[in-house]
Structures are given as structure tokens and as C-alpha cells.
Image (cartoon, each protein chain N blue to C red):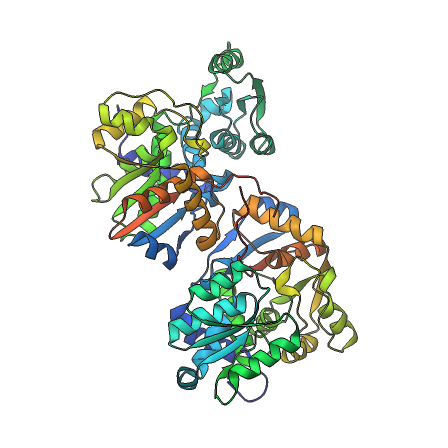
Length: 309
Length: 309
């Protein structure tokens, strides 16, 4: 990692480190969606990524950047979502013992993923305070590597590899669309696109529009109440992520819950893929704002339980 | 088409004709499924194919083989399923007017697909007799090309292109697994694999095991009662298809309804793809029979409506 803020070279370095462990995920296309969007749209299927989301990239990037320490001391995170599962699998692949502090209220589906990948789960209560206390107890006296879900230069660089790969696979892309929650994927996309002339744009749920508000007024906003169905986007922007995205003047398009569900259905019907509601936010934003040229949409994850068919 | 039964050269010829109009569909892989199957398994995602199933290949192969006549006289089929939608889209792409005779009881989901692709729909009653009457009325006095869903040499050759493509994409495959209903996909796979040393094996629902019974006794069996959830596999084997598969001594593995639904869920959870129950039958059979070496599984289609999430 270069001193200070990460840059495009850090994305390339992360790609080299994590390459052997990730899927180079497929890029899909649907003429029906092109017709609705008014431009060509290609989808980068990070729902096909190992662990089921792009979070695998950042988790591998962090552990591989300081592998000896991680292997000696282990790594810990708090997450009831995709980051926890990704770190668990990354740890298994790299020989790092992983502990995930997880609220006892987390869904059985997400808990099973973390368990399946062999991480130790430490239960905590549902509040932020209870989580911090549990995390401190786990780390007490140990040199354990704390791996936050998005606010970290190696995480940002790792997530940027999704965009870097997409631009290699579809060099005609003019704009990359991502969902924005903590901002790891979005700030990574900004780094990866740096200097290429490719624009990055983001979608955010109306019910969790802290990025939109914060970037508009220049002050990072707290996390919104957890109301949106896009459960991966209920967090506030990280500090580093906010800095990168604010300097970039990221344009954020807000979308309704109905638009998110409609986009999820569209991906089901036209692409035949399983996408989380959070993943549908980027497409919903593209359809809301309208596209031109060639748009790349990053489908961030597919970890949603199968309903009874 | 060479005289008599189609062969591998017909598959290659079909691939050349239809190449510009189809997707070269992605091949996916999941280590979790490998572990369950006891061998490496790669999935050929024909659910990503245009019109949502491999049927697009056969429909294009038929129309393109006699294009002038098809464009002059139009084409007709009867189908409440994927073949109807595929022929409708193939007709639109090739400038052929398509009529689909469809029982008024067909699902709104499947009807919409045929309508969306611009075909004319002629309603008929639900019985075979009513369908035949409606079909005869449509064709009366016209030189319209009748395109059956599977019992046709160009259809077989066209469906064989799915296997040919898969073997190009994953040359280490030892066995190709397909679902068997009318037998278009299975007999096409036999032609495409011909002489390569690759084996073809099939899965069939226990509740619709006419292929298993017919191939065992050497006499083609009538269609089973429509009880299986794998609605694409409720038909009897076609005559040509039966001949090809009987000569090949196709091994068919029968699977329970529960095994089909479990395989569908597995593809959802591990591959993040939408697969019809019929599509899950091949994977269910592989898991039932056990695999070795490298298995290729053709995911035949993904046309299933999104349940409320």
C-alpha cells in the first residue's frame, strides 16, 4: 500500500494477490434490459463470486497484505452479512483463524454461511454497544487483525478489482454503476476507473440515503434507520470511503423500494440470476437516471434464501 | 442435412447457421457442489440462452435450414412451454411469421413470453384432440412450416450445439448430463459427443419415467400423466429421439420430486442462478448416481416466475 490514500496501483496489486483465490466472474447481457435502459448494459456477476458477493475480494486483499501476522494472530470482524462470510472463507483459504462477532438476531441463512466456512462465531446483542463490547472481549490481549467491512484502504483496493476486471472484460463501458452502502465497492470503483475516462455512478435506497445527503452537504452522515429491503446498504459511508467519494463528486441516484424490487425481478426474468435486493439498487438507479453509451452494472451479491417455489 | 439420421456434421452445420443469433452461454462452477457430487462439475447455463432455454437453438436451426420457405409461408407450432417462446423469438430474428397454438390453460407467464416476441397465439382447448384440430385449422391450405418441439432432425442437431459448445469450453469433461423429456437435448448431446469419448447420461423424474421404461424394454412409451414439477419433461420421447437414444443405450437415472427441488435449491444457493425444475433434473441425477472425473451438466432453462421474496 502506498502512503496515504490508496490509488489505482493498489487495485492492481490487490488483483495480483487475490487472483488465485477468486472467480473471474461472468459478464452477462440482456437485450430486453438494453431496451428498457435505452443503452447497452452489461452485468458483472459478483453474485457468482466465491462466498456469494464481491466482499470476498476485499477480505482476501486485507489478509494477503499482512499474511504472516494474520496467520499468527488470527483475524476478527463484526458482521451479520456478506463481509463476515467472505472473511471466513478468505481465512480458510489463506490459513487464517477467523472470528466473527455476530448479533444473535442475525438470520440463520447468514449464520450458516459463516459456520460453513469454518469461522468461530461469537454472539453478541443487537446494539452497537453490545457489539463493540463483544469485539473488545475477543481482541483482549491478542494481536488479532481487525478487518472492518469497508473503511480500510486494502478493502477499498480489493473491492476495486471488481471494476478493474469488468473494464478488462468489457472495454467499451462508459459508466460503471454500483450500489453504495459503506462505500467500499463505490470507492474501489473510483480508484479502478481512475484516469480511464470511465465514469462511476451509484444507486442508493431512498430509505437509506446517507451517502446522497452526506455528499451533497460535504459532511458524512450517520447510518439511517434499518428500513430498506436492501440490507447490505443500511450502513453509513466509511470515513476513507467518504473522502474518496466526496473528492470524486460521486453522483448518487436514489431509488424507491418498489424500484429495487422491480429491478431484482428484472434480473431474475431477463438474466436468470439470483441477486440480493442490495444488488438490484445499481440497476434501479440506472433505469431511474437513464443511460447512454455502454453501462456496466456490478451485481454485488446473491446471498438471499430461496423462497418456497 | 445428410440423408437419414442426423450426425455430428449436422450439429456443426447447425452451429454455423445459428451462431450469429445465440448467446455462447457461460459455464459456471461451484466447489461446494463438487464436494457433494464427488467430482468436478461444470454447468452450461442455457438458462442464460436467448428466450431463456436451449430450445432457441433447435428453433433457429429449423428455420435457418429452410429459410426461404419459412419466410414465405410462416411457421407454426403447438407448445405451452419454452419451445413456443423460442420459435417466436427465432421467427422475429429471421423474419418468419410464427403462430403458436396454445392451450387457453397455459400459464400467463409463458403466454407473455410468446406475446413479447411477437408471435400470433391461437387458443385451443387443453386436450390433444383440441390442439390437433386447432393446428389443422391454422395450417389449412397454407404451406406453413410445422416445427415440432423435439422430433425433428434439425431440432436434434440444433440442440446438439449446446453440448458441442460445452465441450469446447470445458474440454476436460468426461460425462455430459442432461434432462430427458422429448429427447431433443439428449439425442443432440449424443450426436455432438459422437466419437469424442465423452459419455452422455440423462436424468428423468420418477413421475415421468417413460424414457427409462422405454429404453429398458426397447419400445417407446406413451407420455406419462402430468404429475412431475419438471413440467418440461412431461412428454414422451419423440420417434427419432427414441431411435438415437436406444441405439446409444442411454443410461437414464430416475430422481424423486424431492431430489429435483433439492437440486434446484442447490443451484440457487451455490450458483446463484434461476433454473426451472426440469433443469435441476440433470444435477439431481448426477448426485443420485455419483460422478467421477469431470461432469458437465446442461442447465436447460430458467423460465420460472419469480416468487414473492
